[in-house]
Image 1: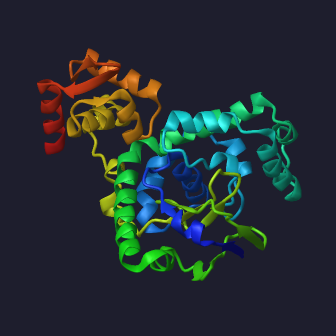
Image 2: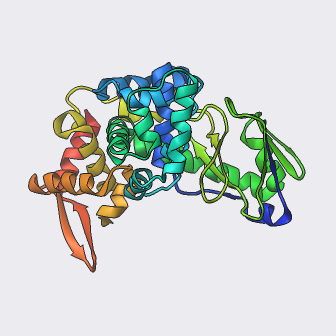
Length: 325
């Protein structure tokens, strides 16, 4: 049990994080995939992810705990994907030691465990490359669905906060969180009893589609709790996983199809805005837009310091025909 102690200043600085964090979703989703958890609501996503993840993910499989405990350095709350990867790659040595110690206590220390604890950049890069490949295969294709659900959850929580204050908000998040002023009691699996003094820093609350229970993130600038977003309807919430043969995704690729749809829904989107909306890196967006432009499905124009994109009539016709299939 973690007891989080608030002052008046902490309550004033407690906030909902409005921008979804792609690496938070990646971290929690892999545990659901590997352990086949989440129930029927996640079955369409599990089938999609299992078909797209091409490697056995040997390093990530060892780093994840049996009940979903993740190394904090991989669970970054930064919403911009490129910046999030930079944060992970530049993790200080002090934050790399606990994961290696955890593996050693469980008798599972691999050959790369001690170099990871020593901050070996080559080992860190191998972990990040494996993690990045997993994200691109399992999270990027469904990022529009994830962000839609998370923003709906945030609107609901904001209404609860406005009506019931912080006490009402905490009570709404999860049964494992219990507010007894001035302390928030948080039952977190695999974490020892601890008392946390916020000391005026406040608390960030981050919803997650894939989280099953609340989690208290350590080693971040502002103390943060992730909590499960509201329940999913599997048939409704994973349209990307229900693509029929002969569809647009089969024709030009699932991620590229998502880029084309995003440009159609948000004409004039910049490359960086598309990266944020779709949860894929800037270089990947640039590559996809270049292919779409070469196929005359979009046109791109420079607007000051940004490149913005618009769907052509051919692109609109392709989207309309794919929708009608």
